[in-house]
Length: 272
Image (tube, rainbow, N blue to C red; front, side, top):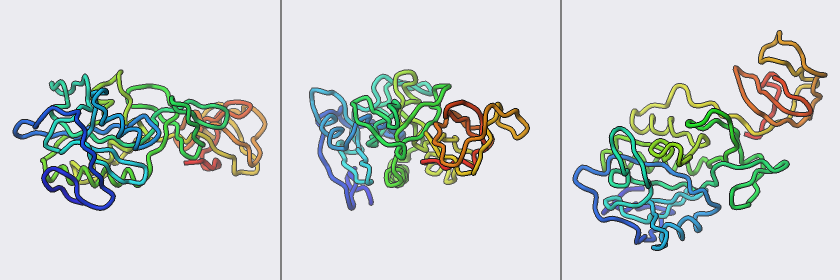
């Protein structure tokens, strides 16, 4: 993959121009990449929205689950992806940044043993994790990103850094806190930007909480607090018991079965 005349070139890259743009960047810009999720089911639905002149929104790229890319706006032109936004004394990040949309439903709601997006589609536990958003205090359910998406976005950001001297990589959630949640905690944003901008991996990535799991020990004690000497709160959980994972701490999971308490995490087989 490379960049020629401000367009990505390579395998699995398509170009579908969007009319939703504002002309050229000023000299020295763009210097920032903004990462988004589409909050929708498919790349096609996102592309249709972002090329619709009545919607007044666009992005430079859409990255599908399989890592394929559709470019909507050349990198030297301003796309409409950031909206009302501010950070570090700047406002209106459209005029500073390249926008990358990653196909992903975003946050989900648990419905029995499945997880539902706002548009109604249900997803299995294997595609879901529980994590705390950087702008929130309690965990919620989030649809995972595929490794193909993560690898593709990393490669794109590396190319953009070399071509345009990118010095900032931000999530939409960081320039519009309280209004936007993307890309959310399922995307390894801290590690990606540390790799791209500092050429290293972050030492302490955010801990992600699996959505559910199954007991693997023959009998697993369930305790009041996440430590071995803590009082037991009920009879041990037998092997095969399915549990909802509520929180994690120091190698322990707080789980809900018929009761709630803490168990040693090494005895839980998770869907993650």
